[in-house]
Length: 340
Image (cartoon, rainbow, N blue to C red):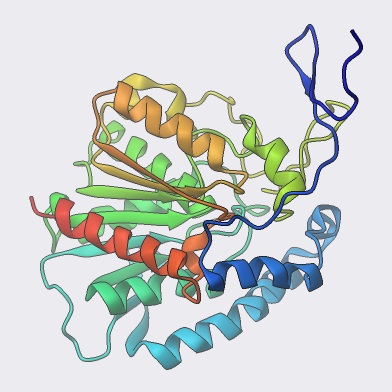
């Protein structure tokens, strides 16, 4: 009996050939999220080649310009004080509620997204402002070293330097670390790095839009590449995917526990309580699921939130109930776990 050309075709090597199909907007989305999906009909697709060919200084300016409108909206809606500073020899932005009412005993370290190449300080402010304002926290956003000028472990070394300096004023169990996308991966790296280098573990960490294994691993990179378009799918011919980190991990073993702790149960066993957030349309879905499963296997309390119909780092989207719910979950998680 012949196989229907419209049905998936299962090959002997385990591959599945998937016929073209139309993916509708999820019936489970809020009206705001559904409207955002429809709006993408007028949004240009991600140009990975152009991104990597662009001059890095120009690209950083472009990303900051893109983030500026969102930052302006946040500043209109949330009264915060933003103070440039240096902690542990690293440039930071110190973000607090403008009325000075932040929790004096707890602090959050924010690690911005941007593929380990861009994101300072536009994406940093997108991540720090709502958490500081809504959670009444002091949020220290770190300008960690990035590619193409630097290589791993430069970024996590900077995070550790800021963290070590903050230990002079805060108990380790009352310091939280969180980040989105590259910042989420860097958060996982920090949780691995601190105890391995003689520092007490943080109280809790939030890994958003990422996991403890490389981006592009697992099935979700293939699916999201065609239904979300934030990142390109792996090449169909099986060739090496484009390195959107501009060589940040060059020379790093792909299973290095300081870079990708999700592969190492002994390293994950040193993690604090962890919150992981991803979406069903996100390329980071597989890394997030795998990291959560590994953490549970290692005996660590890990919570995984998967946003239905949501893409990469949907918690940035405060115009959607789904984004607001994600931020509320982040705040609840840190309130619960930064108590030691």
